[in-house]
Image 1 (cartoon, rainbow, N blue to C red):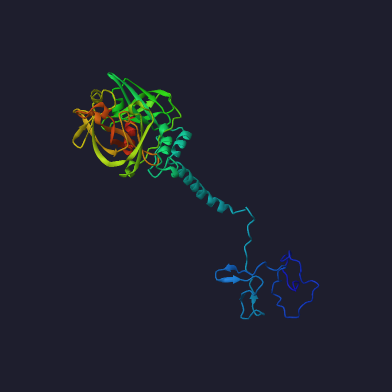
Image 2: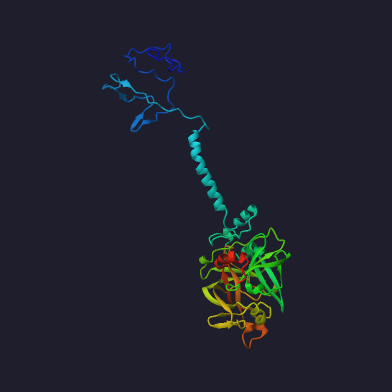
Length: 385
């Protein structure tokens, strides 16, 4: 039957399955094509055109006539496109995938550069940019969020002790490393009037530091270590996301005790704290011991602030702060810096109190980190306002 009609070169690849077999005497339409030399693997519909399924091995839809399956019309064989060889995708498709693959790669890289990984990116690129993240990022593992020991282990290497030699004594405070090259944020009152500055890192190394810029109106200063590299910068968070009751950790050097860790909660937000802008005021009132005078709620604490003052919005915390914590880190549950500790009430400055009364009573204040980040460009420019 397969020899009844064949076009030149057509179906050459098929063997005649009926050769030598008994032929049926039923009428044969010479225009019908020969059957395939194999039985289809399955009788699944093959879509050849919209709404026109073709059933392999079954009757084909007829066109060009009114007859049924026994003749009268011409069978229409669907043209099935050849399957591409494995791995041989069309060039156009490969080109189309390029931009999407590139976008996916960029998205992955962008996602990676956040939270604690900003420091790694900074080290690879050699830039001297402060690592920053939102409060949703976590420097500590998510399973350890809020764990004081984990926070202390992650952030302590980024907090230093700052010792300033003054004309009438010494002053001890703290600072936060913000770049691997040794840029450190501290309070202006810690280094104001300093003739020389020594900084001690958590591993015991000592560096000489120079003042880069100061802003007495915000009680902020930026200093830079000489000959430092490969330091671990802290991750600056987002203080606008801080809520009353949030867990916080404070790290600093109270009374010269480097790396002291305390914890508590955020007691209040947007407290108006007034401090002196006179570089000699703190030295006169506090004797260089870190008891920086400030005003809050119409009252003065730790001595007289003098006539030249400035007021800023502060985060209030009950984490224990003592003289020497100034310039240190206030940290959220994820290990991000949310404030620079700046003022604390010391009972020993009250009238009639004795030295045994000295110490934290749970009334401390920190400059919001968003204020610090907004002021960095000014400080880096060398401004000494």
